[in-house]
Amino acid sequence: MKKIYVPTKIVEDYVPKDFGGIRDEKTVCIVRYGGFGDMIQASSLFPVFKEMGYRVCVNVTETGHSLLSNNPHVDELLIQKDNQISNFSLGEYWDKVSPCFDKFVQLSESIEGSLLLNPKRKVEIDGKFHLAEGNKEYTWSKEKIHELCNKNYLEVTHKIAGIDFKPSPFYYPSSSEKRWAKKTRKKIKTKNVVMVVLSGSSVHKVYPWIDNVIATLLLKRKDVSIITMGDEICQILEIGWEKEPRVITKSGQWSITKTLSFLPHCDVIVGPETGLLNAASAMKNHKCVFLSHSSKENLTKHWKNTTSMEPDDCPCFPCHKLHFGFATCNRDKETGASLCAANIDHTRVAQDILRNLK
Image (cartoon, rainbow, N blue to C red; front, side):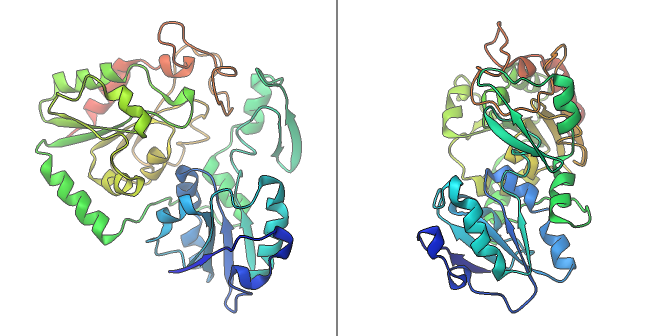
């Protein structure tokens, strides 16, 4: 795979050779920044473009490029440093990049800029700009937001790209990652392995009853081990389980690529709306996902073997909003968690997992 690193320059000084020059072969450039879940969703486009006879180049940041290094449907990576181009200059930058390719698909903020509302930002919906006003609350009614935003993320991604809808988001591990994952699974002696993803990118993606779920699984089944997973900060949520031999606490210890390579070896994957659950969406193993700001239509409509856990008695669900704190997210008084997370019954979650174990 060819890798081209974009030099650091004033945007107006960029020339085609900085991006590898004008391509001789029919090539599409797909731009996708954002989190690794966003990149996994974008990966659904790559095999479709390959079938159409395109070479595929993906414009990514340094953070995201490792997820594509072994993808057989990607021919080139155009790599920027994180925050190399300011948000205010991205439009001008893309104008410089696009002439090097036969087709240019700009996906950055394609979902978070159109189907998830953000305070104080204009969002484009069906080709028209709307203002999501306010800092502590949004001015639109829930019904209006739902009408505008209740569309499937993958379908919208394919529509923006102008190609047939053939959903196939997938992470391709390296040979060494595959060997590591297989070896790691062999060390776990129980028949079943459940991966529990402890948190996502915001306050509404933490499930406050996860200890209840883990305890139920351990009591009901002696042949199950549980791997808890998350960023380093999630280690605080693992306190109390360190001495339980069938709970393997790994938050902040496995790289994202190692974690992704291990997903096929899990019998069940449980967690909020995160990149790991997105990466597992096309896999045959069972997923149990806690919906928060997204509806089934938004997120899990095309996922394989998935139970979408919706909250009970939560009038704000699905809110279709990005939250960066509790200023815009309703909070449960008992647990301190978001209302949508707290109102997913842990007995339902445990029962769903138990039904899907070997």
